[in-house]
Image 1: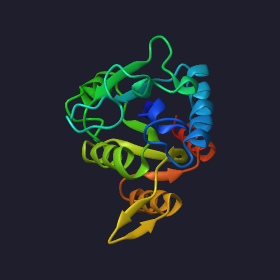
Image 2: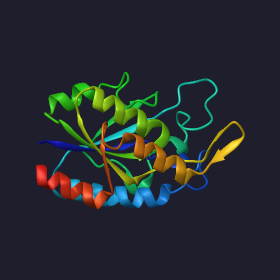
Image 3: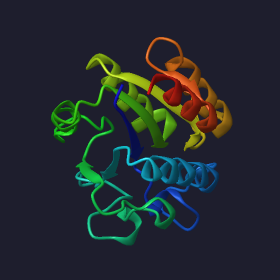
Length: 186
C-alpha cells in the first residue's frame, strides 16, 4: 500500500523564541527528522503542510515572517510537495486530497503540530476521506489549554487528543513502531 509521510505545520513560531512555542516541539522535530531520513532513503513520498495566517487577528504564522518559515531540521527537500493552508484542516481548500489520489496514496503517516488542533482536525478529515491513518505521537507537540479557569497541561492535552484519535480514526504509535507497521504493509 502506497504511504506518504505528512509533516504538518513544523514552523519556526512553534519553537523556542517563536510566537507560539509548544511543549515538546524540539523533541518532536528530532523524531520527524528521523522519519524524513527513512522516507527519503526509500524514495517514499513526503508531503509538507505550511500554515500561513489569513485572519486579521492572527498573532503567529504571519505571511512573510521568519516564524512562518519551515523549521530548519524538517525543511522540505527538492521534489517534496508543499501545500499552504489557512485552516486547521490540511485538506480544506489546499488540493491535498486530489494530489494524494493522483499519486495512488491511500495510507498516511501523520506528524506535526499542534496535536489538539491541526493534527486532530487533519487526521479526522483524512479518515472521512477514506485514508488509512497512522499518527506518530512522538512526532507531535502541543501546548497547555484552559477551560473554566482550569489549566490542562500540555502533556495531558497531547495524550488526550492522541487517545481520542487512536482506534477509530488512526493507529497512534511511536515513530519506530509506525515504520515497522508501514514496512509490514509495504
